[in-house]
Length: 604
Image (cartoon, rainbow, N blue to C red; front, side, top):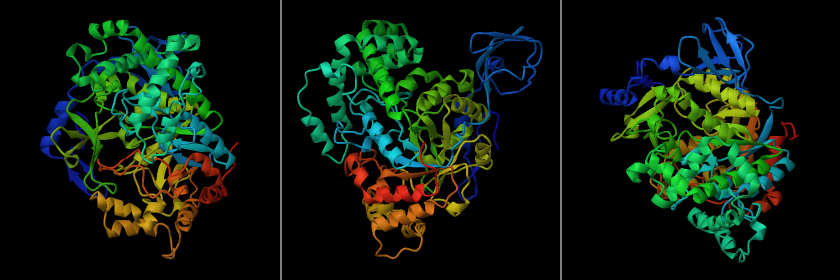
């Protein structure tokens, strides 16, 4: 049951059993949510579907294009989709969001593609980490094999300080891109620099573990030198003028982080709010440094546009952001204090999970016109043609964990799912981008049905699906594994379980055998290549709109990208065993492409 604060006093766990939330946790969550002002409904956005004839009284509708439509009583059904304003005759102005209600689906929706941890996909020309130039190379390679898309890890920004955050799921901002993914050579001005040879980059490429700190130490001064040549040039200056205030605020945060460190909650008190006079004074005095961080985003936008041209690239939206990062600094008044989000115990993790990310207070997010959500969706979906929403159930409710409690001792807080899904649909249609909702873990009844009605693709994994792949829904993305789960080579050889034992997270014989059984009847002496092919032959039986193969499986990688709950492992820092130039000659790569492409249309 959900109370007036949106706090659920009980919930159904992954085994279908009802669990009661402790009275202490319920009370803490209610106190944290607080009460919304009495007049919030008069000022909060009115989110409606196209064709709605909602009664709004006498008002003017200020359309997004600058024109105005007078209304006597009922909203005209022919208003265009978009972000408008409702100006009542006798009340405050409020945002009006008109949505198509359903996400975009391309006409050709029977495709296969590759899941890529971009940082791990290095070429011989990389500077120690896979970058946007490597993404362009992967795009051409994938198209040549008949793939219709690539799906990449979150590319969002980290703080510009050391140490660099390795997890792409804990960004400093979900609105901007990580400069580590810049390839210096294509940046205009690089050719004018007098640089020593690239021996350092070659040395970094020789290491299997990616050292983000060394990569940033190598790239940043070179990027700074390019910027210093002419402060980015006229194209950047023009682009910067066209951007919203959020770019300036982010760049100021980065410049402050350079001086005071990447944790804004430890900064001098007068700098902890973006609207403070001290911050404005700093920004004026440090304009060169602020401009540099804005210029990095311009260079990233240029390279990302080039890298994604001609092929759908599905980008990943994390569920949240670093509590000490730029987005938290900008939106601190909208966040729940002394609470983090995670997940209750489920099939993925019997102890539950605490992701150490701060949640928005639902009514405060609504009061802000949903701008943080809109900006995050729009920025992640931009230029790429696809979006994967991590933990999509968070649009309906989030597992809040009060400070001082473990992940088992949390409770669910509900969010305005209808409004949020309408915004996703609007941004999807505008960008002509397909949307995938990662719906693994505890999923309440009705959620998957609602996602299907909204034309969000569900997520199905061979490792976890109860039904056979042939029974998966058509509106889904099908895969064998994910970044948090064993690769086929790691599972088949036993290497993944050996590593789990080393880190004291062994799931036990039953769990391992359950996964191995998903490969079908294979002789014990079958090779890794045979086991991998068997997994993807099973996957190919699925009618899913999108099928995806991981590069780790294709190249025989035994270690998964991330082992949840393990902090002393090089998570998110394992490069592929060979440069991506070798993919063209890899037999298993060709086999998987043939298996998945046999029942799919070729890329166009």
